[in-house]
Length: 155
Image (cartoon, rainbow, N blue to C red):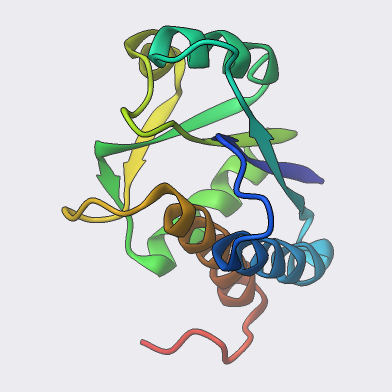
């Protein structure tokens, strides 16, 4: 089983985007169970002080022993099928835990980006962090449905 965590800076509370992200994470957990993908969790952290360095300090303890994917505008943009295959490869390579990082309003600290195994982007546009969480959770769900042969994804 490869646990997947979406680790985010900031708390959304009861915002609609938070509920959407949780819904897709739950769907991904259910769909991924037979594929040894999941559970998919969303973990929100907050720094006591403003700034990327302070955010890095609260993120760092959650990265130990994980394959880390930092969401960053300069990262690789994956097509959905390729992303699904990539998750399967990470699982097949023996990774027990994958952590996807979504930083605060100013992005991720350079030390966190340097510590990541890879970076990924949601295309060339900039997205609100609340939507990025939901989009990432949906793509993880989509990946599970692609790998299981479900008709959810259409090319």
